[in-house]
Amino acid sequence: MKRLGVMLAMTAAIVACNDRQTGLTPSSDCDRYLKCLSEVAPERFAAELKLYDSQSACWSSDDARTRCAATCVAALSTLQQQSPGACQASADGGGVDASVTDGLIADATVAPPIAAIDLLVLIDNSYTMERAQTTLRDNIGKLVDALAPGGTLPDLHIGVISTDLGVPYQVESCQNSDGGELQSKPRLAGCKGPSDAFISHSANGVVNVDGVTNPLTAVRDALSCISALGTTGCGFEMHLQAIAQALSSQVNPGFRRSGAVLGILILSDEDDCSAKDMKIFDPAASQTEWGPLTSFRCFEYGIKCDIDDRTAMGPRKSCKPRAADDPKNHLHPVENYVKLVQGIGGPGRTVVSVISGPTHLVQVNLIESMPQLAASCSGPNGSAVPAIRLEAFAKGFGADGFFANFCNADWSPALTQFASALRSKLK
Image 1: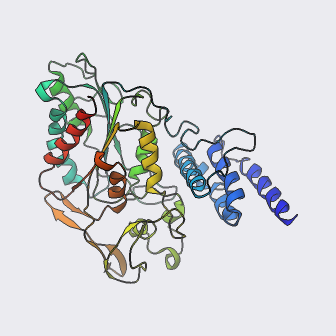
Image 2 (image 1 turned 90 degrees about the vertical axis):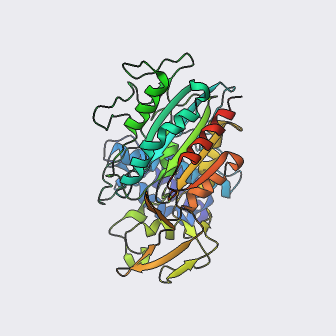
Image 3 (image 1 turned 180 degrees about the vertical axis):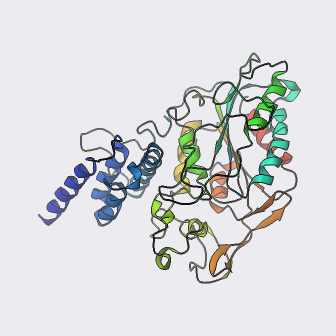
């Protein structure tokens, strides 16, 4: 009877959660997640409900709503993985599919293979990336050329996104969000971008760039033109969540074609911080409990090493992404994103390449009385910290996942290797 009373109280709380005063449409994803949580882990329900009640920052804007709804999608998927068979039906009897909800995450139904490539390029646009973005623009033509042996490109879509999803708090450079939307604005003087949200090259050589005389040159120049994303983005980079949102047909209609080979290129000097608990970005959160509000929170609450103590300085070993059931984990599990992208791309039809900080050296230093993750490399493009989650994401694709050192002076080997792997999938 006591259990029944608890469940009734939880159901009432969920209903109350829907009576929001912001005017935004409530997310059914979060309602499904809360219902599932009340069944599987009722001891966590009250704390999670506070994140999505009428006073939550989740409902303060459309961007915040999109982020939180996507967070609920991934959280529900995690619950279902932890408790197989649980929460397979919602209260109204409908099935729960964590990969297809509210159109925020793309439909994972894959059509028969087609001879085409959809290439998503994710570029870190935080304040330390200026030199790296310049290098990428100078070298991105090598990627395009490698996709066109003999000078002929395949049927191709290329979209560019940033790591900036913002946070629902007043944090410098994080008030706005690109939301996973494709960035196609020309950002260099005199250059031409595509007429659509992404670059398109058809099988018969038609390119959506005005004044084209040479399709290969037009694609090369247009990609360089729209890749200069700048350095004003949020310093809490959410690479994997941005990719998940970018592959949604509602966020970027027409970009992703079911059956096409899917390619994902990631360039960043920091690791992924795709948070399931936005409180890690709360400036008002106790620093005694959560630590200073820096990128170190992403490391502390997303990575587990042999030493799991922010007050202990020095090297770390055996570092890996925290497990979904780790009480200190506040980021979405990497494996959720691997499964999502594999489902969207189709069996053997997805290639991932990451250019980021190598993971062989992990060390925590004390800088201005705050713990800080030391750079694992430095070079002409700047320095980078170990990208443990991003490397795990690439490894999740087996032989179709590649990881290159951000600090290498020449990225052309990594770019051509990636392009060759994409081309091989067309056969």
